[in-house]
Length: 326
Image (cartoon, rainbow, N blue to C red; front, side, top):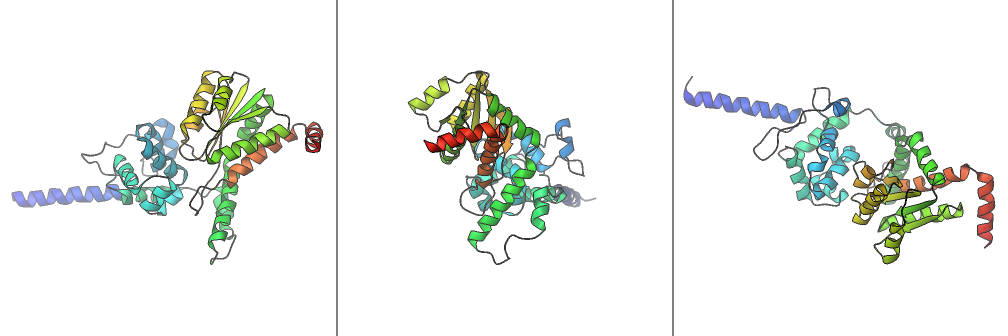
């Protein structure tokens, strides 16, 4: 075969191999990216039918290697695979509170040429996933008609969020959370920015039940004094949405160091706050609006308080009645 024909055939074979790699949902190797890691035993259950790791499992395995902004993208893709599979890079960036260029760089860090190839892998995994309980309920019929308004679309998303959260929470996790609240001498709730409201509301509900509760919502002198009093009889609850505030992360680390019980309520399964906690409760925050939805978070907070109340309803009724008369 002539030398030119040999080169053409080689290039044709390389092109065909690259096309197959992309179609299988995996990036072809390049000089700018690392070769794909082999699947480990811990992620074998998440492997695709053709033998490769599922995209979300691969991202989780490499999570610690990413930059801070890339971790925001990674968290969002793992927890919202359905959105990553069909949104544009700009829409995904807005949801993950980062830039579209970061989404592209993250795709390349995984070994893809760009976001379209990553999105194809997300679609492949999403189509292989069995429908969750919430998706089955949602598919039974829309909450509103097809010509729903923006207002109705947000309500419909919150309706699905609460159902999705309820299906994903296990009874053992919830019971462990309630036991921790009841058995602790004091509860410290950490939440900054928009989470400060929910921390304050949880404190209010627990105070009604005569549970000693405090909040840390800013690095003030008073808040730092509360952190200094954390001990092994304290339950520390960290609230986070998306990337956690450094104060919340430091609070959870301090709690672990001092032997305190720890609980995280977060919308990101890969959140550092959740990874530092012994008890983890996750909620869904999907929304078409310009901010995350915290409807399911509010439901969890009220359900936890009611779970504590149910342990001794008669005693708590007397306490609440006396509190209201003040």
